[in-house]
Length: 265
Image 1: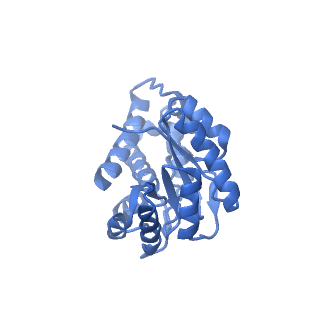
Image 2: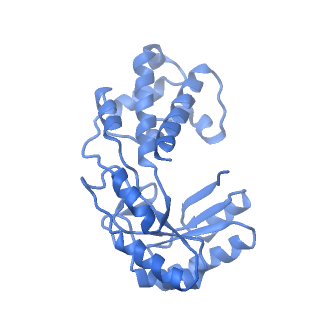
């Protein structure tokens, strides 16, 4: 069984659109708001979602780094007392906390997680008889072998370090129930693109996918596959795969997802 989850929903309307479109889980990210406004917004999303059998994730505390439209120059750790108040007043099903993880490809070498934060939150809500899953955002491990492979294939990824698997595994018994990974997938897919054009150089001049190679060659320090996929946006948006060459690109994406997610699971 899987869920279709909206990550970092920016407002009530985006969550409603996802729910009405068939999503089984939504996140409303009010972490940039003052606590009371975040509670109010999250409570409204919970009320709408729960009436339709959809679970809701909130966020409290601010992660550094960047993921899509989410950006913060510095981190603000989650206050466990605020987290308990937030969970009680919103009845949210899951809560993303800030405890040392960070969005993006550079979380800092030898990053350490402040496990006392989820421990404190979990201890308090357990005593109150409340359930809420704690979520670890920005938890990519940034496999160094993939970074090396990208650079060996002409990329230029520098200062890329993730959260070690040991740190992640140690966080689970402290109360972390859900771990979000994105950067690892992006890296694996970008590596696969570069391998494809190395192994099939004739695709560099292909009218459909050759533009992807041009962008790979121009943006050597980029690792987000979406930076390269403009030439096949119809495939990205609507799933149309018009020929075998585009199918090769889709295969790169699928294999990258399976490699990373399968390894971590």
